[in-house]
Length: 94
Image (cartoon, rainbow, N blue to C red):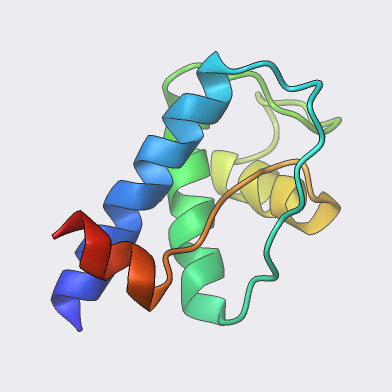
């Protein structure tokens, strides 16, 4: 279970780094957040990016609003793009 969580975190970090460097004009279908734990991990990763200086993708005053709240709002509005790992993706990377 811990290994899966670590792999998921690594994949989210890799995906978010790729998205920051890629062209955001290309539309992508986003998977559904299927558990509150996945949402927490995604919000934590995005919150770290905001704390390191990333520009918020929603209208919010970064001086008055905590990065975690901004990250949650971005996820709710669909502004944060991510991919989920499937069993076949995990087995092919090993």
